[in-house]
Length: 217
Length: 217
DNA sequence: TAGATTGTTAATCGATTAACAATC
DNA sequence: TAGATTGTTAATCGATTAACAATC
Image (tube, rainbow over all chains, first blue to last red; front, side):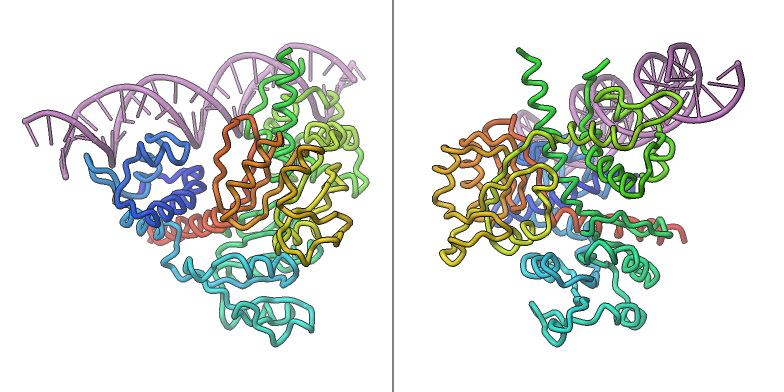
């Protein structure tokens, strides 16, 4: 029954399921059907059952899904129980924004250190995380590897830093640099947060929409 | 010939074409074939020709594409020539990071103002952009509408601010809040930058990959 | 039991890839 | 002209939706 082929499209939707379940639990809702959840999320109930069924059997026929149980299962699928460790490479504006706003610990991710080049940052522990020199990154990772590298460094050094992360054996890189990393190992998962692409997909969609509108006259 | 159905998947790839063309031009490369560009971008040449052909005929048979011409065309597709105006709603850590790092003007987007609630920010013009009170947003937009609203405000106020943006007639919202906006008008384009989803897709992919690895033994 | 709702299989839809005639 | 490479159409692949038997 378990372990069907999990589609890439499904993997990209799973975090969103988690957020919605979290919100449902906050509201005190104990159970939900695929139809109701679909309504909420703007999906079809078929798709939800399909997605979830590719990871296991989490529902009960005639009842639906228990919110708290499904949430636990989804947390497992997302790897929240794996105690992933991460290093943040680049303590500039963007890195600090992430530190300030993203609740890593709450979701089971342990940030072991921030790496930067500015002497002024050393010795500080912003949000409880130690700051180290980027030049120590390689040696530090050799002693204590990390699962995830978060790249918020300036674009010029991105490739080089990505190579250090790769060689240290990280499993994934969360890449905020405007550079497309070229890794040797295709097994390392790279997730790009590319703001340019994001904003201009928006602009492109607006542009297309307007073009269609005009052509309706 | 022109104006075929443009797939959503293509729209999401177009900004990336632009970035690669920009890099090619910087390198002084004047022409490129779909095959070479495909190699560079990790796509197939078919896909590239398909994508571009859905917007027009930009290549020359036997030659390929002129980098500078294609770049101009792609800029047009992305709406860079439309002089879109934008307002940044939320001048906190994230908003300021965006102001500091994203070259809006360079890509033809005019940021008309930043909106915040902190009295300490008023009168300042970070990166040349005036700061205004959020309470002025609605009135300001009534006088001078914006094409794009950039939402970097705290989650609590997201819905309310989105409604103000919607009623003012924005064409799109670039949403950084951890809230899924529910707009009345389905024609308004919403682009979410959801860091939670991004990081946990990464974790989920790692988790899946590891599970597959283990099951190989 | 009767009603509700799952998990799964089959049908549909959309996106990617392959193939090739047109042509620079 | 011969070689290269496009734009386009047809074939394949993958993801979404519909349908329904199984069952709580």
